[in-house]
Figure 1 (cartoon, rainbow, N blue to C red):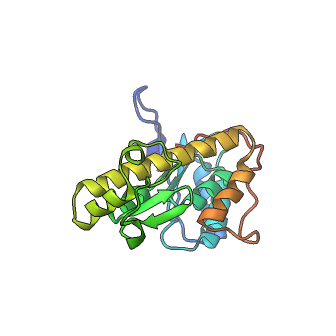
Figure 2: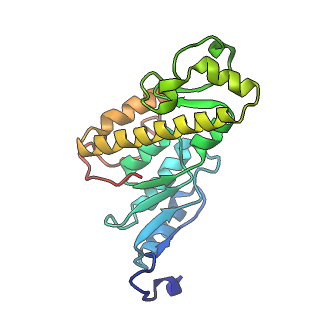
Length: 220
């Protein structure tokens, strides 16, 4: 690991590191503290979102973030659940990546402002409305739930592609809402709103995190 910190050319990619552990808060504290002492340009957090309940993910994440430098990017790997994302931002995470929007789309699951739904459901067979009335993406502007469901049921490859475009557009818009909430010190209100739709994290399970008046973050 020390080799990764050796001087490089001006065009080299800045070195990052990724601490990994299990769900133990104590182990995360120890590992993150040891990694932070090496002074990398950024820190990924791996080993979470591998099937553990959110009530176990967030305390472990809080333990890791508490030991990482506040002036360096924190990147949470593999977390795409909207409720977990907004809670992670409250704890100080800046960046995310996850296959969730595209994986769900391939199987006909749609992300919306009121939660997710299965497009193959019979309730959508005659629905002329968009996937999400509040979504401005080209898919919602042009194609109905009924038509997209038809494409899915006949195994037309265009269907998962169109749902993928929608899910990605929805996720980008969701992250922009988080950025705006951080800038306007309304993140606490947004956390409550997201929890009401995507499932709450009980107060006893939610670690104390970034307040509504938090400093800006670079959620990407």
